[in-house]
Image (tube, rainbow, N blue to C red):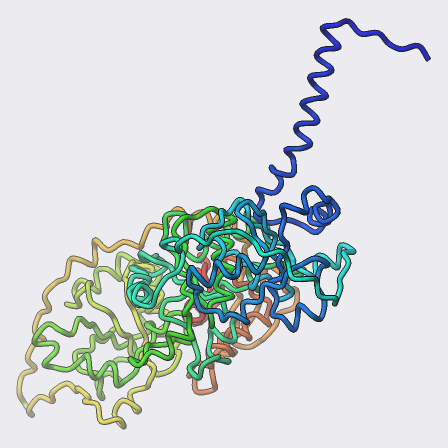
Length: 565
């Protein structure tokens, strides 16, 4: 075949193009390696490239017994359990860097066989002591993904690596959070208004049984006050790989987080907490994300007996003893008790005996007031109740739908803190708490008119909290589900993935007391309700819809609302 002759200028252009392609092929591994997550195919290519192998270190972060049961050939076991999961000192970290064969320019891939949380903890420790994030990578899906891609696994130990020469830097500020900062954050994390966000978001990385108190590590069940659950069940797909970045961002927004929000993650012992840290700080690039490595292990051992919650929002429940204490006459006279009490029981029952200072607004009025915010504002303004004070609703005890409807109406109005009294009036009296009754008039005496209440115009100016940008994004992108509440049937024919039918009575005991938090969570998830959907509650009776909505808020569903009628 005759050779094709090209003009000299064109030949020069072709040569330059070839050189550029060659240069790009050399640079491509660098560009690809800048990704924090790498897959099995990418790792296979590096392990079979002798030139790049010299600059790469493969770490298996699994505990040593799991590493010995099977690992990727050539992996160095970076067993955190051997050195303990407390924060390493600079000297301890330098010893680990050198024992793992890490040099000053090494690029590092970390994996494990334990849901990636050990790998992300090693990444956290390495980065905290100076290793740049662009030299740190996680094998997405860990050993399971490697095996699924046909990667070889061995039980043979590798010779100790040549000691590395890396120098551990002093710990970076802000990555590790100490107990005093977490204590302060449990107050700052309190939402200012229903559905709102505080100054800091606490994220617990443990699964529902631990979060809701069914199980515990250290003898005290539950989670830190105001913490929001975001565990590996939410962050990882079924095959162990991280969920797509848009989905992670959507979930973070539903939990009230954005790039400007300080976030503190924690777990039981400081390992699983690095999963949400990795998602937020490394994958999303959010700057203000720290890990409380002490986690529950330190929190529950504190001699002050720091609080643990099993409900996501237990402040929505008040006990008879709590109300009797804060409703004390002296506390009211001194202005210490910033408290309103509204009795939604029928007027005759209120007249037989009620919580002192309780304002009677019976249940039969709330169905109308719920649909007429202007009338509700007018009634509250005339009641003399201070709109800046907490409201405790007194119903028939337990989860009373009438009290729940009043709660939903007040919250929709924009009130910041409304709670339900758990015990019925019989229990209130049995505990020796005072009962107030209208004074009986003397025979033949004229009935004195009621003293006029001072009007409270603040109710008219109260407005529901405007949704934040993060919550607005969540509402637009979250999948929708409808929870159809029906007192009589558990599952309706024709239910789909978008509609779940459940009686609100399935969430309470026969006496209407609430089931344990973990039981409620299990009942909702078993019925098919997704925590990551925007849930609209429907019912023929708005009081029953409000009761179901109240429980969803208690148990920590991020995005819920009553369906428009």
